[in-house]
Length: 131
Image: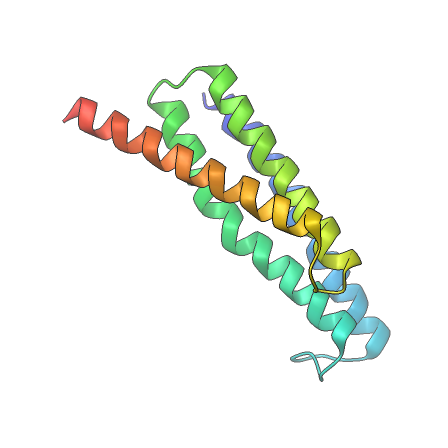
C-alpha cells in the first residue's frame, strides 16, 4: 500500500479544501457568484486555490509512481514534506502579499519545482532501468 503518498495526498487535499472554502467565503462576503468582478481579494483567493490545483496533482502522481517503484521511504518523505511545506509557504506568501511578490511565495514555488523535477528524474530512471 502506498502509505507515504496517502499521507501527502491527504495533507494536500486538506489544503485544497481550505483554499476552496476561502474562495467561497470571499464570494459570499462580496456577493460575487461568477468570475471575480475585478475584486482583488477574491482574485487572490481564486488564484491561490487554482495554483494549488495546478501543482499538486502532478507532484502526487510522481510521488505515487516513485513509491510504487520502490523508492525508499526516507526519499519519499523528504520529497513529500518539502513539497507540502513549499505549498504552505507559497500560499502564505501569496495571500499575505495580496498576490504580489513575496520571498515565501518564491521559496515555495522553487521548492515545489525542485521536488517535481527530482521526482520526474527518479521516475525516468526507474522506467529506463525496467525497460
